[in-house]
Image (cartoon, each protein chain N blue to C red):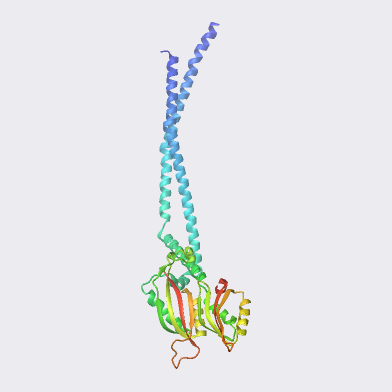
Length: 175
Length: 194
């Protein structure tokens, strides 16, 4: 029994010393990790950030800026040209069409056409009101006419008929 | 103090030191490195997107040049220029085009330029540039066919001419040598500038 007690007393300080050594090693490793992070990795990362920042700044060259500027101008011009062109009605098409629609025996005068309202106003004169009836029939058959209105129709003793006409055409006629 | 107690105390101090090193030195440094990594990733993405954008603009610019943009720009830029000679140029342009189509110009007047964004025009929001429009009123004399031809010419110009209104009237003063098929015409048009 005495021998057994002596053996256990010798082993305890050894294991405690080992633990102490392990702890000291962990502390040393911790310091090493810190130094590696602070004095190896961190400067590397900072250098990388500096290099990339300089690269970003160097990308914005005058030639590239000029190209982008020219592209923006082209985009603006092309867009504005298209918009203005699309909103410029072809009034000549109204005159062409009206020439086809107008009755050969009716004389129109004081013709005024406004493209924004697509409205034409004019006065007409014909030898007989039959011509006016035929003109109405022609207008009724035209798909490009949105609406029309006759007013101040005057028929004299000889049958001569005068009238005012307001005509509104559909927008697709002027495209 | 016994050896055991000293060992225990030293071990405790070392453990505290290890925690201290981790908490006050390693962890903050690790966080800094993580932040730097994030910064690097952002910069790399930025460079990549800038390079892609430049590549796209370079290709677009090449396509634009291949499509003959330089010539086309010269043709259409009359609509988008600002010049102190705008009015005399347009007066000259309108007189020339009218005479080319057999019309006699008796008078041309013009309004002041108005920025389209300040008007009630429906399409104003679709424009990108500071387009101004100026209304020109023309008094003309000629045949109906010449007038139609003039309108067609105006409508097919690279300098955009928006015809606002036309009036066809019997001639107010007909001289002896004037053909019988001549009329008076009033033409109101918009022209554009920046």
